[in-house]
Image 1 (tube, one colour):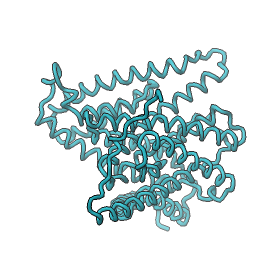
Image 2 (image 1 turned 45 degrees about the vertical axis):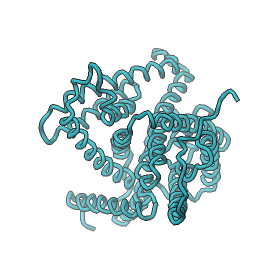
Image 3 (image 1 turned 180 degrees about the horizontal axis):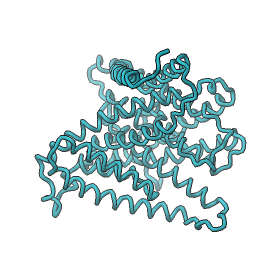
Length: 428
């Protein structure tokens, strides 16, 4: 077998990007998430490497880097599509409520299942493991909902973005709780109150996000040169990494920056209006859309292919994995059904089935500190949940698409946007 040289890697990478583009086209026609096809491609790569005699490749460091960059690009891509308008206020509020309450309820339900069914899983550790399994994947949802009605598409973009950010914040909050509960070693620093630390971190992050957004946009709209957009991306990566080192919630910085760009008229007014030069800003905004979209595509492609190449398919054959995974799946859709019924009403298809787990689930799973890891937890559960929720979403989208086509053949039948459904009154 020929030695794997640089040209072999270039050829392989190019073929993967080409196949990813083709998968995207297939996904639009069939509603099968491109992510599942990328994972399957990665599994194929795994067997090719074994056939070529390449074994025991440690993909984890590459996955972590790709995951972090991909997460930033995906959230930025979503934020650039969101418009903060008065007419969207009800939908934003409802999507936030569904995301928050759904996340918290899913975490408690999954933690209860893990606490009962996985040996040596304490309650707090079960909460830590349950959090990645409870976060919606915007990396899968955003590219998959393009064919839905506008109000449903926007709902999923908001909900998945909120779920990503809040889920990551909850994950590190639980780590803070575990640190607080752990015995303090002699000579080590005392742990602060995790609740106080959480709100201080949130306030500081929001302040940094707004100030840095205004500074970056005020400067970069005047910079001339073809590389300025990648320079801007580099600055955002720097802010995210420094924020993470400072134990802040840096994904909020990315979200706020994207919202300021996509809603410049809202943020640049009054005394701040002179900072905005419309023509220059419009050119920068358009370029940022293109760069973010294409960067997210490439990073997402290699992340899921490498993830597929690193998974152990044999773990799916375990009965313990099957029982735990089925229980977790049931909790995911029961919780989702309850909150969609409360806040949206009767028309909850295909929203009910659009609850995939993906990039952030994998990324946070790898981020669990070594001293809080449970060796009894089988990573096959993670793979099972990702594949199963992706397949359920696929079926849901296909069924919804076929119903939409039937409705279009019947004149006079229209969908009623759930924005018009009133929120439940709490005093009743």
